[in-house]
Image (cartoon, rainbow, N blue to C red; front, side, top):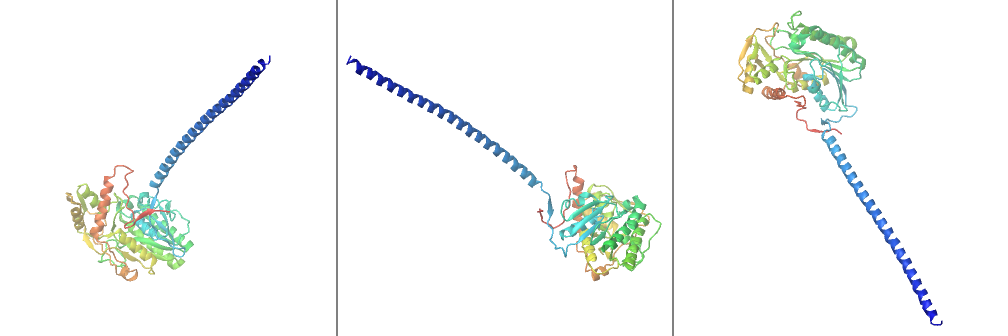
Length: 417
């Protein structure tokens, strides 16, 4: 009995240790299971985090690509000067999407002015001014000036009118209305807002002149009922109205009598001497001369004309001023010059003379030199080569996306802020 007691005690102690060990083992199992679950949870979370990071990285890459595409396609503008509110003018250019008008718009925009172009796009084209569309200083209005226009401006360059024989003869009544009613509307606008008006008149007011060269005091020799009369007489009555408004209403007016002008952005089918000869030579077609080709013309490059218009507008001289190049050539001489520059094999073909075609045309620019300090600077051959290059590029176009833009010359293009 005495011996049995220690055995029992030992068994109890052994069972106690076993229970403790089992308890510890249970705890250890619980810890291991918990750790395993925690580890799996952490691994899942880490994997989820990695996946999220990859998704975010991909999204960021896509956003960067989109930003780059937007940056690459960002509209850029020629750099313009800054003018403060005292010097910056609000300027209206009628016919501003045309050949001469678009070059004038370039100069005014580059100077830092606010420019509004009004055009009915009969001969003008949006592509002539598309490099300014969206600029804060530029506005384009599709409007016919035969209808009244109500805006606030400081200066008006009135250039609106078809200027080449095929275009102004196409609808002679419309040509007369543009130069009469349209001019009245611009003069009425100028009177209301106290703006200065420059009328783009023409050397055609001299008709087929009886004096040579033509000075501004010459009254002209015009057939009032001939096929060219809609333009010739339209411009003559426009000049009359300008000076009537000046005398009666106190409107400040300037009148520029523009002689033959050429350059990039000329309409391909305007029927003028320069465009006709260049197109025919580039395509090796016969060069058509109406008459014997002994009639003379004086050609100026478009940038010289624009400089003259701006100088006249901002000067203090209000009588008509000839703006042209006194360098005179016969039509056949001019055809031979263009043919040689292009290296064309075109032959010269004579056709019947046009009715009322002036036989001589050469400006006396003494008044321009004296009162607005202007004379042409661009060499004729340099201007012709630029025009030839523009027409050559135009002929090579086969898609609308192939642009043949002629940006403002000698201007460094930068992104607009």
